[in-house]
Length: 210
Length: 210
Image 1 (spheres, rainbow over the protein chains, first blue to last red):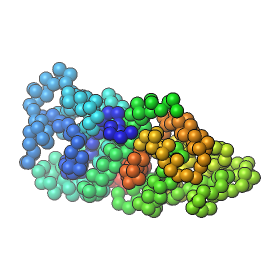
Image 2: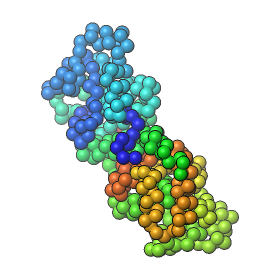
Image 3: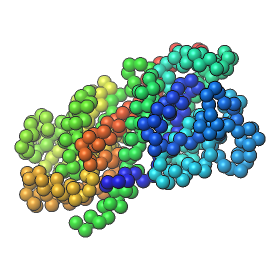
Image 4: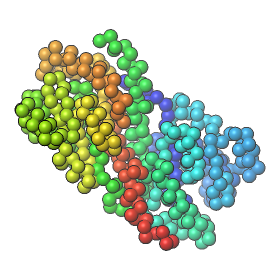
C-alpha cells in the first residue's frame, strides 16, 4: 500500500465569525500543505486594503454575480451583510477526483448548502478563544466603524447557533495551535476507512488465493 | 475557552492483524501522549518472551476469566486462536468521565462489541504496507512455528473483511508514520463539535445579553 493512500480529495469547508482570523490560519495552512487547492470565492463586496482580485476573492459586480446564479454555475451562494458570496463548482469537482484536497472559506448558510450537496465534505468552524477577544480583534482591525462592528458581533452570535451543523470546532487561541488542529483534522480525514479501503481492496486482490 | 477544551475522554480502540506492529505503535504513542490511559487487557494465553503481567496483559487462568464473564465484569471478550481476551469495564468509565482518553488494544470481535455498547468510541485498524510484509514480519518474529504463522495469516485475511466496521485505517509502513497518523486522529477527535460544543456553551452563557 505504498504510493496513493486515499481514494479522492477531501472537500474542506472553513467558516467562522468575521475577525476570528480565518485568513491568517488559511495562509499558514497553505504554507504547510501547498498541495491543497484553495478555492477562491466570488463576492460583490469591495476589496479591503491589501486584498487582491483572484487571491483573496474574485471581486465581481452584482450583475455578474446574478448572471452566475442564473446559469447554475455556483455550488453555493449567500448574502452576508448586504453582499453576495459564492463558490464556483467548476474546478472543485476536477480537483477532488484527482485526489487533491480542496479548501473553501464560506459562511454558515453556504456551508449548510455544501453539506447537503456533498455529504462527505468536512466542515470546520473556527471560534475565538473568548467572545471578548473577538470584539477586541474587530475593534483593533480599524477598517470598520462601530455600527459595522456591532453588526458583525451580533452576526457572530447568530452563527454560533449553527455550530452543530459542523464536524469540528477549532479554537484560534494562537495561529500555530489553530493551524495544527486543522492539519490534524485533514490528516485524520485522509485515514478514514471510506478513503483508504478502496485502495487497500485493489492491492489485496492478488492475495485472495493465499 | 481556555483550559478544558473537551467534554469527556475519547475511547480509542486499536486493532490489527498479529505481527502488524500494534505494540510498537502503542509504545510510541504512549511516549508522545503519556496522559492517555492504556487499558491492559485480560488474557488466558501464556506470556511471550519479554511480556510482563499487568503491563502487556493481565495474565489469568481460564477459570478466573470465566468467573469475570459470569460476574459481568467485562466490557467485551472474545476467543482468538484458542485463548480468551477481554477488557475490564471498571477503570474505563471513570477515566472517560474525568476527560482522560482511554486506549484499548482488542481484536475484531471485541471491537464490534465496544462499538455497539459505546457508539462514540473511535475504532482504528492498523494494516501492514503489504500482505507480504506481514508474512515476513511473522516469520521474522520466530516465536511461532509455521502452522501457527499460517493460522495467523489466514486470520488476518478474515479480519480484513471486518475493516468497514472501523472508522480509520492506519498504515504501518513505519512506526513514526503510523504513530503520527494515530496522534492526528486523536487530536482531530478532540476537536469534534460534540466534544467542544458543551464547553463553549458553558463559556457563552454570560454573553447572551450582549
